[in-house]
Image (cartoon, rainbow, N blue to C red; front, top):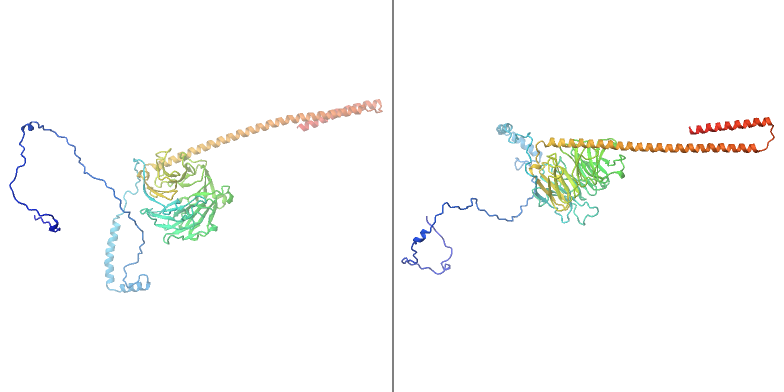
Length: 605
């Protein structure tokens, strides 16, 4: 092997030249062996030595540049045409088709391509590469790991003047995007220069929003259309209803007229299950629930006033804060009010009195969250003060289950879409609580401190794995829960159903017992009133008898005095006649006494 090294330096840069010469070897040191040292040698057998079998590794940290992505549209046009043929011109395409069809090789080419295409189609029909074999099997995984959640992403309000994230909505197709409504709900305390924009975020790009929505007034609510993912519905702070089409840009596509809109901020908007997919309804604290069709959104199609006295008077209406509509119950909807009362309504009712079916009362503050259980629509969840409550439509007097009273106010709640016994709540101290009442009823299964400021809104993804929480400073935190909280457990449906039914029966028994006690108390009160009335009648009767006796004797004494006065007067009377007159007078007095006695007896009767 030939070793070659090429010097690139000049000879003058090497320094002084070295001149080597040959000479004989010289002995500098010679140490002779010492036998005594050999006698002191001790052999150690066996020898224990610690060694490290794993590979030695080192840890290093490095800051890399953030990769920024940008979404751009691509315009696809019809291909396969020659350059001189414009596919948009109908005449040119027809002329070219006729020219090709007249070609002699056209039929042979079609026959060859047809046989190849038929073979491919038969292959696809014979084997389905996307077939899922055990699709009908229910997941029976048991939650062995401890409940946990971790932060995936944080979406911050890009504006300098921070606003609260008041509402969240997931994209209906794949949940790849998240729409966030930003506004300041403090009355007349909005800072000067505050932006009205709300944003649509892509989950893979938290640095920059994908689209900015520019309303005329800050948005309080924002909802994706489940049938058309390009359309969004927003409720404004000034009471108007706005509609966007993301294909047309950031500006409002349709807007309701101010004179036919709400008088207060729109706190609730929901899309209805309709054939056209364009119907929705909204609620506000002005006490009105309005139906809209976005094809003619200038004015509402129907208005229901939340007057529980059923007189349709706006001054008596209760302010609406939250809405609930279940597609399986198309004629029913529920409204949560500022006064802590849940109102169940019937949309198809003909008279105003029939539109309000019943009410549920049990909260001390506004109903900020109202949602039916996705597995058992008869049961619904509410948040209205320091507790979250679960209700049943069969028990109207009180809720069937409730959480303990927390130190911080509850702001929002939502059911898990995959587990019937799990729900989530947010609080004013920035905490997210995850409740699993099959696992634990008194305390949350997991309590997570998301941020230092208050959490205002909450939305769960359709698969139950991701949770989005909006805070007071406009920060939207995306969290991923553990598989145990997002996977249906063994027999969980049966356990949840039996628990709901058991608690409903218990509340019905308590209600019946309470009604029975009230009836007894009412009966006792009525008995005491009757005894009091009898005593009063007896007292009055004695007073009447004594008074009648006094009047009777007064009349007798007055008559006797009159007779005595008449007898004293001197009158010339014959002796016989006078005796007869005396007898007559005496008989008259006796007759008068008998008549007066009869009259007094009649008065007493």
